[in-house]
Length: 261
Image (cartoon, rainbow, N blue to C red; front, side, top):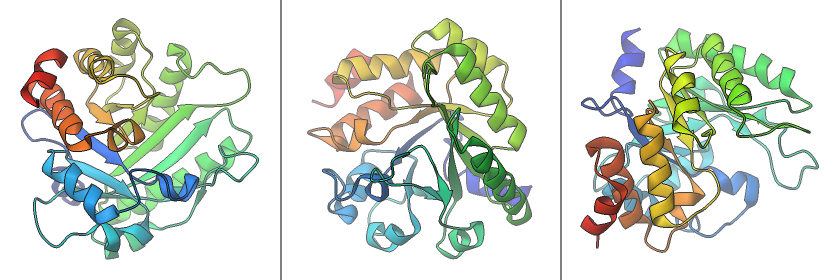
């Protein structure tokens, strides 16, 4: 589908086939959180740092559009829930592919939690979104995680299952947890025909986080899809620029940080 190919070029680096994506959809879930109070400003920082794309809910696209400066790919997130819900793992669709097209999106994303009580509904919704994406030539990023009672979120078996479900559904890009081990993660990426990106995970130090990203990329990850772990840094622009050097240039974490000082 030529439409998907054209749009994916605005998200994935042509030379490396990887991407640094910064989700900024957290306000729906968590409210007016630190780092996302001024959307125009943070989008400017993220784009100038060299990130390939951002993820926004439909209502924030206008506020995040700066009309100037460096361009950046736009992914509109279709899934939502709030932290006030007794089950925040229960995601429902709040936007359509057609709405995302009207907003100028280069791709859409959805969220699935395997192992959650409403897993079946999330999978059913994903099937409908995939149908619409194929109809309109819109790339789909599936954010999929093992989340539920008694489930280890870093289990290679569980993460591998998540990746396979997303691939079987028809994802064009996949975001999931990193196993924490390059060897086990390499087995997952090698068994998947779709680019697999790692989530940001728990916030760690700059060097620790960049080392995790570097290990994942060397294990076949197609980059990183990192939200709070990036935009809530003391200096988001500097840190995201370091991420881009690690992902796209293969620079060591130590050197990436040194260059940005």
